[in-house]
Length: 285
Image 1 (cartoon, rainbow, N blue to C red):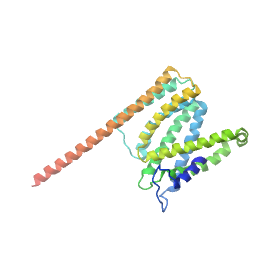
Image 2: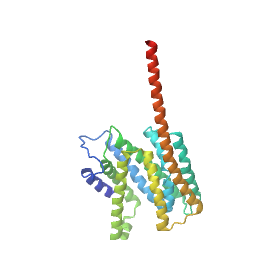
Image 3: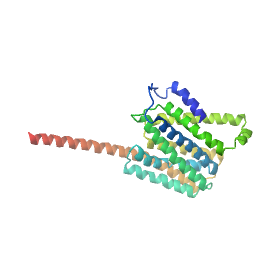
Image 4: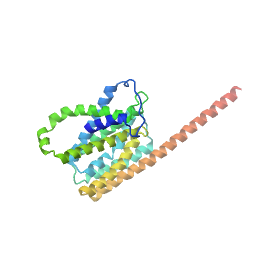
């Protein structure tokens, strides 16, 4: 979070071509409340994700996170009022079925890790939907770097008391060498570019589409973790992972179909309205 704060501050003045900077004369309404809320969800997402990795394999954690589109659909409907079509909702069934199949046959299954990973889904989707509102909303229009910088400060403020109560500071000092410290710094830099890129994308796409795109990334992480860490994968667990990925592809097709269907319905309604108006005019004449 310290690295995202520093890098976010730099990118507010040097966007690196990622977005168009804007001059702000005054802060938008509810500035501190919004920044604190997103900062808290960022903190919770990172902490819960690390707790999940502490108890279950990377591949299983990423498979659970693949169900994020379902959470995003529900949260988007509640906060942004975005409605999804029937086929989009049906396409989420394979995602959830594959997740259940994976969970039932995962060798590294642990209830604490499973609950933490599911909670990560909830906080991350809430963060994405709320961030979409702050970036694209007419009343706010935050730049990605502003959102990155201010929410990182809020997250650090929350993290300081949590670290004092939950972290063995002396133990960390003894076990942290220069190589581990460099790994922490690099991890922070990578996390900064991952999150600010997500904020840039949110200005162009819906939160649900962003979650589905993330699932494609998770599919790559699942198989990469299997290769790098040698996580054992059963046949049914692998089948569940493939089912999740197929469900995501079906979601993309269903979204295209529903969007085309809605556009046709809208065009038909406009056509009917025009004909009704013309007939009314002729009757009056």
